Length: 91
Length: 278
Image (cartoon, rainbow over all chains, first blue to last red; front, side):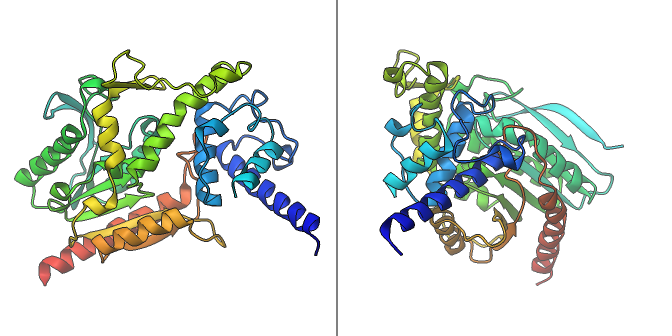
C-alpha cells in the first residue's frame, strides 16, 4: 500500500467520523445531506456557536487531540473536508 | 395525575425555585442536580422525564435551579461553587430531618463539578449520568463559546475570530461568556475541580455512560471512569447506546436511557435495603 493510498484512507475515515458527530449534533438532516463537500460555517442555520463548541469537544475527545483556539476559524470550519484536514494536521 | 408542587425553597443565600413531585407512598427521594450554564437548558426536558418516571416508582423527586440561575433568586454574578454546594447539602439535610427514606442525587454532565465529600457522606445512593468531573476541560470548552460566538457574529472579519469576552465586564474579577456573567473566582473554582478532590467513600453508585455499540470509550472518558472507580469502588457502570440529547441542536429524548434508568433506581433501592439489613 503506498503513502498516498494510506492518506486517502485516513482522510475518508476522518470525514466519516466527522459526519457521524455532526449527525448527532444536527439531527435534522437526512444522511445523504452529509458529505466531504457539505458546507458548514454560514451555510447551515443550526451550525451556531454552541454547535461549533460541541463539535470541537467531540472532535478532541474522539480523535484524542487538542485544538488551539486559533484553529476556530471560518476557514477551518468551512466544510467537512476542511475540518478533516485540520484534524489530520493535529493528529 | 402527578402531585407536583412548584415552590420557593429557602436556600443559603436566596429562594431556590423547585419542582417537587411527591407520590402517595414515598420509597425514596431523588434530588436532580442540574448541570451548569447552557447544559441546564439543553437537558431540562430529560430531567423532567426522569423525575416523572421516578415518581411513578414511588420516588419523591426534586428539580431545582441553582442560585442565580433559572427561576431561582439572585444573580449568577453573586454565585459561588461553595454556595451551590451548600444549597445541595441544605436540601439533603432538610429531607433527612423529615424522612427516613433513602436519599439519592442524580448528577448530570457538569453538575459533577459541584460534588464534594460533604455531599457524598450524606447520600444513600448516587446516579451519575455522563458525569464530567474534568473542570479544566469543561471551562476550556465554555470559554470557547466566546471564540465561536465572535466567529458567528463576524464571519468576514478574521481578525476578530479569537477575541473572547473574558473580563467583558471591564473588570478582571468578572467573566462574561456567551451572556453568562459571573466571577472569575467561580470560573477558577470550576476549572480546578477534578475527581481527585473526592475521598474514597462507600455509597451505592451507578454511572450511566453513553457509548455506541462497537465503539470503544475515548481515552479521556475511560480515564474519568477509572479514576472514579478508585473513589467509589462499588460503582456500577451502565453503557447507554442512545442519542446524546445534550449535544443536539433540537430537543431529543434518550428513550433507551429512560427505559434503563427506572431499573437502576430499583436496584439502588434494593442495595440500600440490603445494606440496612446487613
